Image (cartoon, rainbow, N blue to C red; front, side, top):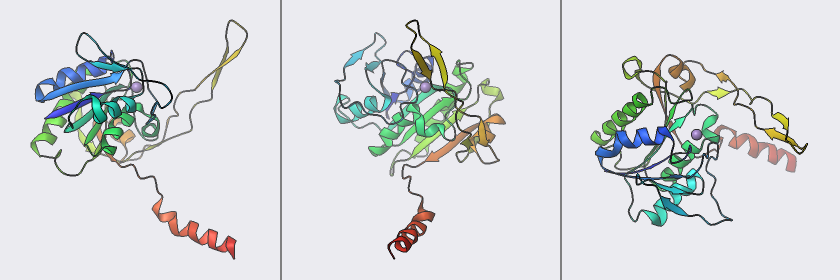
Length: 252
Ligand code: MN
């Protein structure tokens, strides 16, 4: 089993270190992660400045780019082999509902998926890494389970896993969920810098709007580990005929 490991919080993040420690004896695990925090960078690629790869004393390789850059570089030349699995995380904070569109953690996993490799994004629901060992243990158990069921062979897939911050014994079983929705983000925050210029800070993500039963929000709120299979095709299929009809009417 060859695993490529990345994240969006940067190569020093406790969530990445804990995940590496939990997975390292399951096979060959190579880490290629961003040098700095790249949360909310989604699938962004760096096209207009050079990328450099360096190696930390612990063997982790780090890149002055985005999470997707890291996985892209790894898969297109740096590793020199095709991993069986791409794992991203463990993120410092939830990636549920609309978060998945912004998330660099999901973006790193999605880059693997786009290259035809099964991929998992792991996030811990509340920030600050409480019970990070517990989340890493859950990640290890899931990867082992997928290995034993030969799930990494055949078609690629993309899983988004959110783990409540609880001791392992207090975590409820894994639930397969759909994405919920969030309310619009909180208002932008403005401050004035020492030179009298106005600075704008993007506000926090909104609270859950759709957290009904069956969603990732609902499951994690109850203490379950949430697993949502994702796909990449954003086409709204039920609206195809509606839009064709509208355009036809406009042309008449
Ligand atoms: Mn992050």
